[in-house]
Length: 155
Image (cartoon, rainbow, N blue to C red; front, top):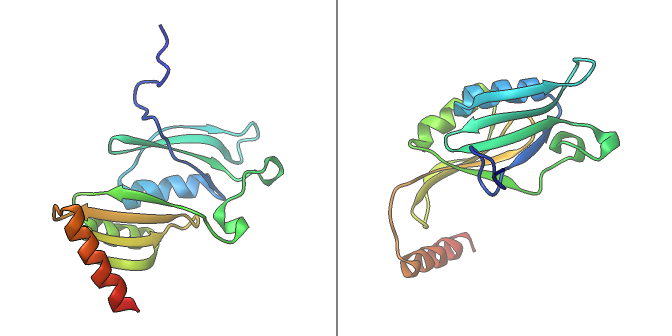
């Protein structure tokens, strides 16, 4: 019997569109320690039409931009409407490694009101990544109080 969700996959799998798939794969390997599971080159061998990477217990699919088929990268559209959130063991070390690999800092790691040490960056393909290490277990009431204080401080 065929499994409706294949082994190694989760119910939800991110799938990114990038301008330079080979470059993106190299970045994700260097910045986040991703493992390349496989990649499928285009018939002319000039691009990658599909690749899968393993990040800890999660897979990521990616493909080369193909505007004529509606697949456009953030670099073509001028921005992204979402981000990828990643929990890591050491956010500061992971953040530094990503910056050294070519990411752009959007928000340096800091302790946040919800109990995570958290930072944001943009990868060379234009995708935003939120990187965090959970450092403190809080009740919903403690998080609400922390949020109120954080938003009041910004007002």
